[in-house]
Amino acid sequence: MNPILIHEVGPRDGLQAEAMVVPTEVKLDWIRRLVDSGVDIVQVGSFVRGDKMPQMADTDDLFRILAKESHRAVLSGLVLNEKGLERALDVGVQLICMGVSASETHSRKNTGMGTEDATRRIIATALEGKRAGRKVQVSVQSAFGCGFEGAIDEARVMGIVAAYLEAGLTSISLADTAGHAHPDQVRRYVQKVLEQDPAAEVTAHIHDTYGLGMASIYAAMEAGAKAIKTSFGGLGGCPFTKVGAGNVATEDLVHGLQRTGQRTDIDVAALIGVTRDVATHFGRELPGCVYKTGPIQGSRIEKTELAKDEHR
Image 1 (cartoon, rainbow, N blue to C red):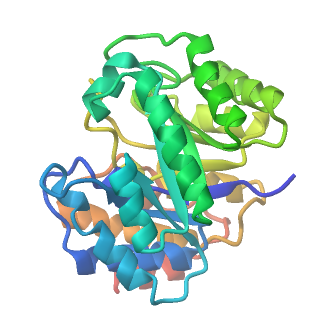
Image 2: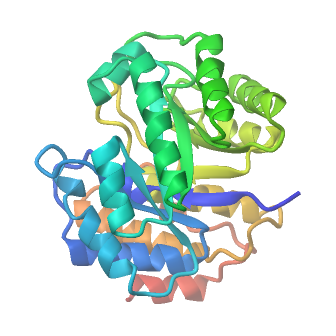
């Protein structure tokens, strides 16, 4: 089995709903340290209007600066429409992420379009990105439930997946926007995507709104998901859902994986250091656990490493 890929979305999903705008230089510091930690993908920002979402107003600048540097991780960006794609292509985004909500209500609140129209538009935009030579990942948002509508018909979710696959879009993220997912459901959905196309690359983006985030992530991995999206300290959540809540913390997942000998190439001390700085910046405790408790004694991280980090 190939090692599970870690897609860190803190700089985008983690920050998008925050009232306090993070200065570009501070973001760059966090992103560079995340990249250096050994995670596989870092989502730098989203190509949205800065007046609508001030936290993302510097996304183009971030990519332009980072493009001049050498990075061991892939840098991804979120695109909502054709204009966003133009911007992403212009600044050289390596992995372009976009998606459609399976919830009609959430889709209209998030994009101003219904699910059917959004699906056609996103598929066309994604194919344009592929023709430009970029890697593209498409998602089904609110795949496991919606804060406004409640349960979402499984057939509706798999219908969007089928439309993606038919168009040749095989990198698919199942997004738990409202945090309604439970392990059995996540396991079944990942399996059903792979039944449609065994070569599909499935990512799970699970929120921890009701406390089942980590369990659902492990279910996704057991079912064959290739990658997991998490955020430093568990920060973040969709600002357009009814009950916003954070992600599963990146350092918590990596710490758990390393206890069973997986992803020992990732520097958890570095992840913890970033999360502590994020918590200090916002002046509050974040949902994550390991950045507060430290790793379990005997794990890969030595106390001296954490002590050095605390006195940076």
